[in-house]
Length: 425
Image (cartoon, rainbow, N blue to C red; front, side, top):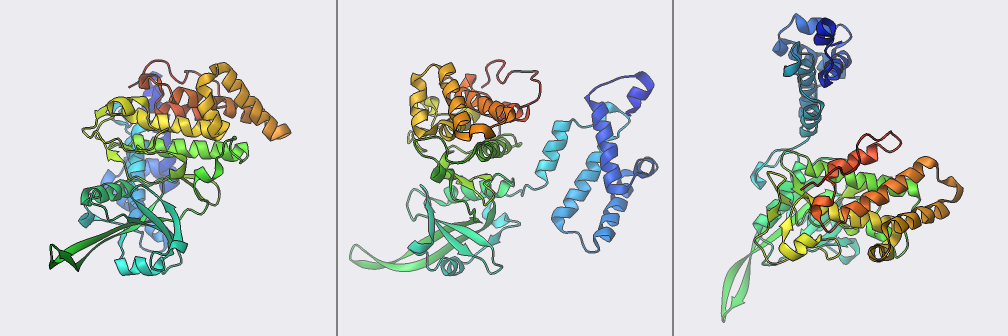
């Protein structure tokens, strides 16, 4: 129990934070650890715990694990501060833990935990970038399947040699991928930036010209794209799998939007949602991503609208406005297509909302027959309602991704707050 409760019967959220700190200390340093940390300086205590884990693992702790150990023990010590004002909030704790895996970089020359591959190597593992190895195509390049020397399968995204793809666009996608590390986002394995000289004819003369080859090496996701699972009718998969996919997309998007430096995807669509062998969703293709240092609305200077029609919100099509609600709109379209089919998405604006929700719910009951539990029925109901809010024309009426994830987490739990209690920017 927190000291302020023992002495003054004061209860706040920091009561649980104090308890959490004790639990982490006990996990990391044993049940007597709280007493030890009181009698020892934080620096010495952290070092003692670190050495304990080195001995326990019987080897040198990798940098990544070392950072985890030190961060967790530092969090625990802050949680058990006698003064509750000095304890972190649970949100601050989660943010700190999420940052452990983030690689900080600002340019290609500062890459860490990724590998620069020679162009010849990528050419070799993709059999000369052969047609047989193509597994996908995007607006910026073609994706080939390959295998590294260690047996790991990878997807090599070779960017088009077009004038409108410059070094900044390449660095943009690379830096975006390097900053994210989440189970529902495709992992960056390495990259290639190769320049060679060729002789070309120009106005009757032979001149030397530079040719730049750019490629991004990503984890290979075996299940293909979500687009392959969608048709005019509702998704061919069972409801449990569909719900797993929906929740995975939401959690991946929540991670992107809620970091200190938010990332907006800006081209979220079924073709950019990959499925692994366990049908877990992974968000891919950050070709249009922009980094934002706040979550305010942004007006793009470009009059060239990029993205995919049908997944772009009206405020972007009409006025080139970009905000977190851009991705939320795209998410709503995807969920409706999963639940009602592509035809269902195009027909829902012409149906009363209550009738559309009822039809979707009844269709899933019929499809699942006797296997749909009351809990699954609530999932269907919640997901379709969320989706319809996501595709509101007025972006201020759409929920934030944090609200969506919270609503999904509360399925089966008594609701305290509605999904949208007011307008959000």
